[in-house]
Length: 335
Image (cartoon, rainbow, N blue to C red; front, top):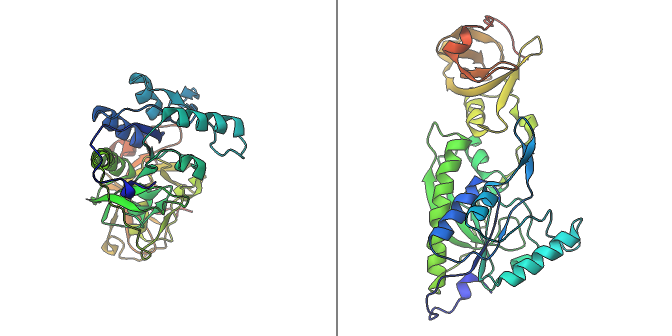
């Protein structure tokens, strides 16, 4: 049964809202749902993962919220009843049935929900997605929006179906992308907006009216998962494109370039400057100058000024600090 099909005359009441999510983006939504007074009978999140220098097992942000709020929690490795983790999937299905949830809210969960799970709650499943669908369906909408040079993004509250972010739109709200936004800063803005929008959607849904509309067929794009190999800066691209990639991949997976001797330098911040900085029209990859303002590298079009860098084994430093112990790279051609 879809959210749009709820009887408009049904009396308002707090909903039983099961929740599936993993990182901080999802944790903010879970906190907001709890604070709004909805009952959360069950939380699903991914298993603990090793993290940090000691690679100790770390609980997800959602797990931490659930434990703090004393919400029943399960962490299956898979949800497909015919998959590799069929026994865990069956237990998860049983737990979801026992929760008797009116609706399941999903946000950055990281596991695919089979149709058997999507149809279990009486009002189906709602997804909090970090873009204005149908633009940037898929795994990395925040990063791909910045990388593409989009000037706005937003949150879509969507009725989930069996497709990849193809369900009907229930609510959406746009958010401008600032010229200096990184994936980290934009993530935080969208997480806060997502928490607000899902509470608004649930409040409307409990009154029995949350109209749905199909996604437009025009304007579909896919936000492919970020690969670590994309972190290497390619000087054959434009300076604008590389500056956007630096912002899009901050904090993860970061961006980097290699020196001719093979040392890898990580990049923390950069911006494009115009071609007047290179009157001699040097080859792409040429280091034009090192100064307190930044490390200037010629690109296919324009110059990339790098203002935060990290040496192997070091820490990320602003350019004036980095200059105190750095070799002069002026005139080198970077690979």
